[in-house]
Image (cartoon, rainbow, N blue to C red; front, side, top):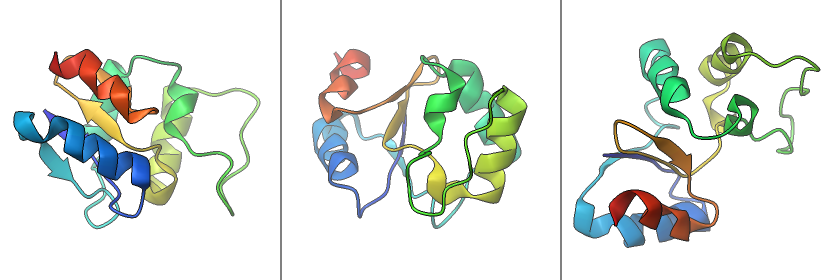
Length: 109
């Protein structure tokens, strides 16, 4: 189990607390951005529309394209990892955005 975590995000910190008994691998994706392979794999397991992986409303975020594909999301996140939605919990089969943090219970219960 991996948790894509941003320590500055309160929802991400709460998800760390909720999942601590599972001892997920904490991925500090801003310090060590995911590789193309990591992101491709994550996109394949993502449980929602791929466009939700990007924080479109953040300051200076790229403009949301009219047509969104996995390749476009991959390119954006490789170039701008700071715009990746967080926290993301990935159990190897399913990846979910833990907003609210209690969504983590879907994968740990």
